[in-house]
Length: 292
Length: 335
Image: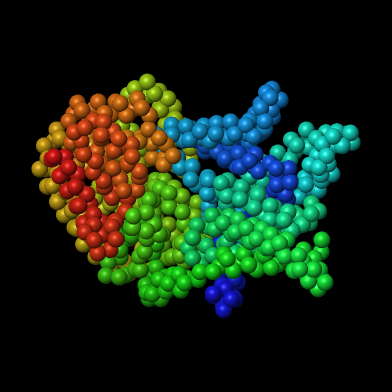
């Protein structure tokens, strides 16, 4: 119970004493900001599977970029673009439901990445683990800059496209009537999801960026109804998961990004439990309402 | 809407409690990093093998040397925690193998080096062998491979060198002056270091002689190695073995086997009558066992290839580990 009995040393000292802890924290917080605002739409529109597919679908791009020696972010972005295009094409030219087209490309891209890596017999660069789990202990200022710029783009994008996303999510026919072009808005949203994944994979890894894309916004939708409020609450939940995750990882030597992701998921279940219990106890609601 | 917020706060508090419930190990960790730090420089090596070598270069406790990757850990995929990052940031020197061995640690080592911590990469001071360059891959995929090799060598900091240099004690000997230089930079007495290097060089020359004598018992035409992953090339190079092939020629843990290569390898094993295949504790040996079953008259021997055993066991130092490994290999091949 050190985090209660000796709060200063548990919560503050690690960040005050170590610049890498501050860098890790900043990387984590920028990831939360980026993923929460776009993740809210992912959760509201039921696009979680697509988010997961994209998080893994960037791998062949990263692998190819690594082999030919260009920036891995560019490779990841290209792969995400190709995947989104592919999903749209399958959807347009077949009667298949969307999750099937996502699933086919998901497994296709993942297998492609493994095949590419397995042909690299002559080098010791070939481990996909480092891309899947990232390396928050090795972030540098270039990574932080990249993430900060993406977070800015994300916030501007979400504000500018707010109306289009909102109408598209809750009434597609109204969107068409208003001339808001739901297909275009959907495309823009996919681009934002891809951007958030690509900007964060170096620090938390693309397996775990997915946790941040879904868990905090999902928890937020349980306690808030208006979209901007969901976003703010999601960022708050994400910040809590990040700070607590980093500190647990620091004090107990556990893998950092996985601990952060686990905290965000635990937080989701705690929120779920509290809201469920509260719904089951109408008297408690009355008391709270009276007190408030 | 507003009344929902106290609820959120309660949820947050609960989650905190859930996440931070277990605090016991924290005290142990602090206790572990503190002792000895005040008097002698603390040095971090990536693997237990380089930690032992470094400890011998800074002999008689001239430095407090510890390994980041624990005994038994796989250097290719070891992920550092924030505690490890802190220890590395506070070290006077980091001794790494380099040549891409510490794949998942590389970013962190680079970041620590950028912060001003000295790093010595042993692999820079030896004649390296190319990685994954076996003579059984003369099949139709050959020109493909050549293309990839060309691609990789043009790529800046990740060469295509085989990183498993510690399988040859003469190559390890070649790294000792560089490690001593780095330790002297870290503030350790030069004369004391030179004495240690002289002693340890003698020890490694003796080790080389011992292994030579062990291998001598095996007729030259029986010095044939079939491995799980590529890791014995330097051993083969030093002691006149031929690496016939590997079950999984790629070092990537996600790479699988391909049936044509496996078939060729099975034929090769039958034709040459090799009595043993060498697997590694850090890698799954499922494919190797299957291959052995298919060939029939061949044994699978598991070697500890990238790490020492726990302190107190037979192979807890570099010298004893390499002796045990060499003896295991020779015994297995003598059938």
